[in-house]
Image (cartoon, rainbow, N blue to C red; front, top):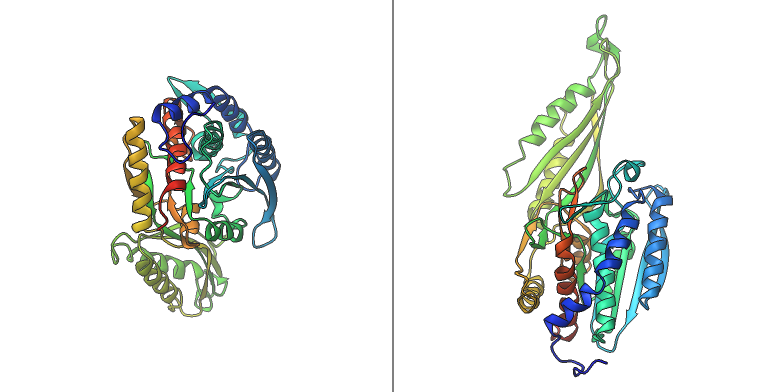
Length: 400
């Protein structure tokens, strides 16, 4: 029976013990999730992992809803799963993670879940299946300790984060605007750091259209889209360094089919990243201007921006969350620091929606998006205790 007074400071040893009691089921659940292919767009696998999460959320006493989402073309992307747990307080707290990975079908069979030297390996073990499960454990820990000082604790699991949350964005904005605080479940950096800021990202697609011609008989009648794309690539690369922290990368360029034909079409995929909104918008405007330039007479170009995600910058609200996390960590014997990272995530969208955000609250992991992706199993108990303790602190903290 819980003998502490409601509203008192939760004891670090209690948090660690409650999290430790859930370590064995955490391992078992993690293995089941990792051994299901759930790459972005693999709807069957994504629904299988959502089914498992739904079962476990219901067992934890959460009300569950599912919402199918699709990309802008209408292609199904899977379901967003939302688990809700009502409390007795006033603050609304959102836990956000994702179920999709970057890996193709067959990866789970080729690289199934395994444990070696205290680390778990497998597709999505760190990004983000280990983090999503940490959110569920935090709910279970707080319920077991009768620490429900929040108005509502919401766990959202999306199926499309790795492709810019193209289908989940409207729902994330709704949830973010309704939350006082969003705690994101991407795993901590490999040195244990939490994440307090992320670069904004824009994926740009540039299509160039020229005129085909015989390269030997009448090349003067052609207008090479390939040449225009090459010149534009050099111009875009020159933007690196113009603004502090802004990077522009032409990551893909295709043009032409045969050496004896002046190519009439080219396609470029460009990645833009920036720390601050002003530089992000300035660089985007300059890219649009460069695309409109006549790099080759007779070649026209147009640019489309897909899934633009604004920068998430550390502000006073984020700093207060980071300070609270450090306070909770001190009580657990877990050193807590935070950093900015160049990768974007749903944290950017939730911050844009108005929530105070802190990220990296899953266990410690690394080598994401690679065959050697890992999760530190020794970090699971302290990090889930940290997350649960932070939720409790935020629930009782003064608004602002």
